[in-house]
Length: 247
Image (cartoon, rainbow, N blue to C red; front, side, top):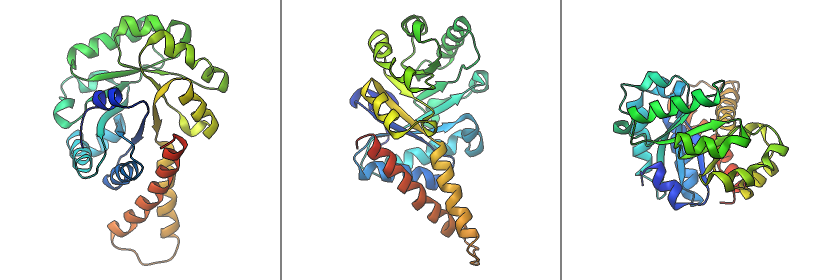
């Protein structure tokens, strides 16, 4: 069922989020999640959304969300150019949440940008990143964000998650999973992570499957045959990631 990110977050203790930039990857994601009874947030980065077009990304997410027996929503991930969507009705295209990537902005400027964005997109659930662990509570209170993505670079910082989760009282998000071990991901979930993002691993799997097939020497002229193989490869990675999360 295609629904909203708010509904999925409120109804589940842990939610996986996977990025897609092609329809077959979106289908692999939703299919894998349905098989393991996992809800899922489909995501497109700023560049992925521009490549697909917001309308198409939304149509793909809605179609597969309503084609499989699991809860599915759509989020705009790592939006850096906030003004680029000032005149875009994201909700009309099926997006119910957005991650504002404010890396490099000061603490005060980040809050200012979030508040401005909320005025132009009042219905969207807002996720934002933060590198100042000791100011997490102040950040969430002043910005009014719905999800917080602490910038975690090592296991020591993962160990600080429990305190951040307790003091902020908003769901925490884990990014950069391609640079974290399975054990680090599991530990982060134990300490309070509620949403876990994956992207790079799916891209590598998709590319490797296509490279392998193209180097086989077969005479390939049907794109859908080639893309079906990449879909199978991506789905196997998805199943593995979901099992790491306990699904």
